[in-house]
Image (cartoon, rainbow, N blue to C red; front, side, top):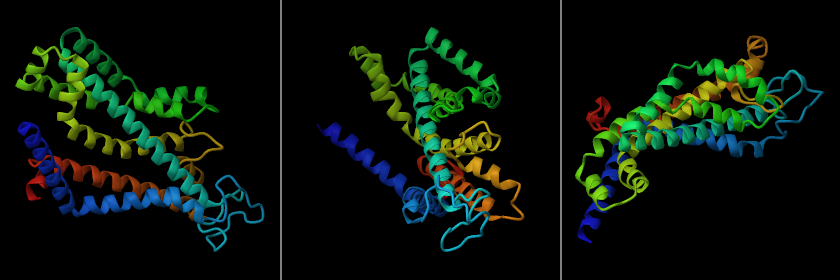
Length: 295
């Protein structure tokens, strides 16, 4: 009973310390505020617009920002405000889903490889090494005609399938070190199933790594999705993402800047905010880092 209380107290103390370090990092706090604002804008902002993202106003082609169209209109009369928020929604959802799936896969693969060792470890490492040498961008580009017209969730699966390997290596190394600890050995001697040891004892001890990785993966995935969509390999019409909007507005960026700048600004702010939050979490969890020592 006392041991349980002490463990809970230590956890609370550590989390309080992490929150304190994070709160002292001004860039991290600013990033969190911006990120929350982008989420609110993406999912609440459309209710304040006068047009939906898939509606067209044929009497207002390439019109600058106005009271009727907050961000102006596109070449075919689409409301840029609604389109930008729809693209931001799609990019955020894809980024979060890929981060969750890839980090979860990395945790499971790295955790079991590090715990079991032997053939399991060699098999997992062979898969990781094989995927690392494959040109993921080209593979997704080649496969894009196949999922054109299908659900965009296939695109999420492809991005997640090529985004978990490095984290799995880190988790594997940490797990191999943790399995020699007394609490893990005691669990093994007590006959606790391997899956419970991995999920209840090993992975919680690498939770900080997984949290930081998942956060940074959101920004990396949004950039990857934007690049693929910009080249026509990502989210397909009639749906939109920030990448497809930037691609459509690039040619007219100088003459009709509102076609490009709002989607571009949303992309830059979102990725920077995620990066600041990820760096802040890393420094908060790791007191040995350069910023962590200052905090």
